[in-house]
Image (cartoon, rainbow, N blue to C red):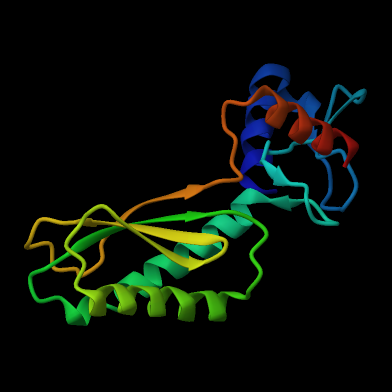
Length: 174
């Protein structure tokens, strides 16, 4: 059982006692049976990107891209000489490159920034058509050339009712 299924089972057991039974591991619903008559399928409500043939959880790209971003920024720590720049990443789907190429593009964009001796902040640089960095001058003494300032997924729609409806409809049909 995954974490969400375990939480749901614990809740149902507290409410229905031993009448809440986890179903054996399999691919088909349900995850839990209650009172031998109620089938419960547990799903996280993830936001999906529907532009491709197979809907993609926004989370799957976000986690990978943000890890790559942090790894690239960390690779510049050995160049820290007292000056520092906060970096935010902004991105949108679909990404037209694999992560190894994206990491190279990120490094190249940051290296070009360093070589250009920019003094006007905040400063925006395009990594590729889908990814942009915004850099801010940082306080000295943090030990990192490029600390992470944040990230924004332009496909994430948080408080939008249509986003919720589309993603709930996708979960139900699945």
